[in-house]
Length: 158
Image 1 (cartoon, rainbow, N blue to C red):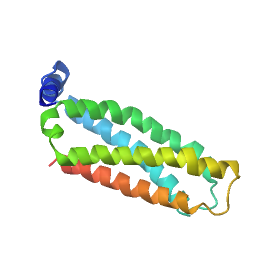
Image 2: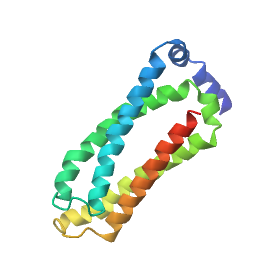
Image 3: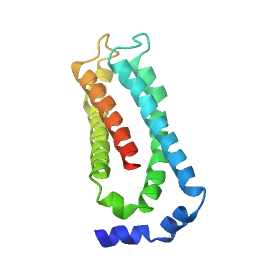
């Protein structure tokens, strides 16, 4: 594993990013923009699941906000991989980095469970006046996990 991380860090791409005056900061900006696009709409949707803005239908909000979260992933994944390879050895042995990755996995699992089981059931039964207890739990998990992911990301910078 250490040899693989060393190979990544010595790759032409990683060296080029590290040696460029602007490329690393541009990648960081793209990564942060992606985070905003992913987490911002997800938070707004989660707040609706928690009972805020009840005048807005959940299905309409879902159709409007969640595609923005998906677009955020288009920025986050490649920029995150490129940022990772510039410091692969240190990050590969950092507990905070692996905690961040595990939390992203939890967030993804939470989204999958919500859309596969919880939200799917509520769509079949129509727009409920009150969202299920499980919808609220999913929203709380989402908000908590994304805050923790962001905190881990910031801690990695120091």
